[in-house]
Length: 170
Ligand SMILES: [Fe+2]
Ligand SMILES: [Fe+2]
Image 1: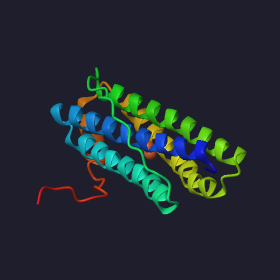
Image 2: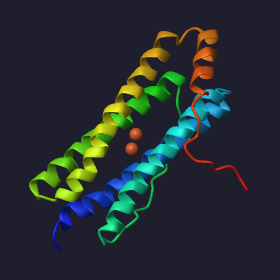
Image 3: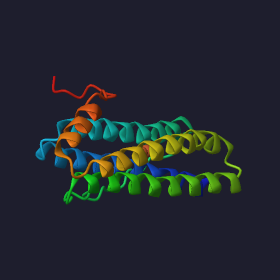
């Protein structure tokens, strides 16, 4: 089958995006328990965004009549020492994902898998934005780490992000 290798790798990327979804959800739960509801909401929205990334590749494979294979998800990290560690972990996660996307892009180029290349271009651009946001959040939380009042202001500001999807119970 043509482009088997890139198709397998794209199935792998679906799992990576779902792993990010799960991981941001765990970070959100940690923040909720620490009474940082703004950060919790922001991370929950971020988790939803990762879900949409996974589904974007899922749709792409189906559109091209490629078999979708969903792998088991590992439990995400659930313990963090501080809110700073949450945002360190978020940046690290995005940097790792950028590496995976870059490798996929390279593979698609080598295999002359043009449709995959164009699809992946969206992810290359998205990762620039994802890393920028993660870097900004980390820098800001580090600046104010010892100031509880400033952390609450930061929490309120992040809480203004709206959820991409309505997932409230019906
Ligand atoms: Fe993503
Ligand atoms: Fe991301």
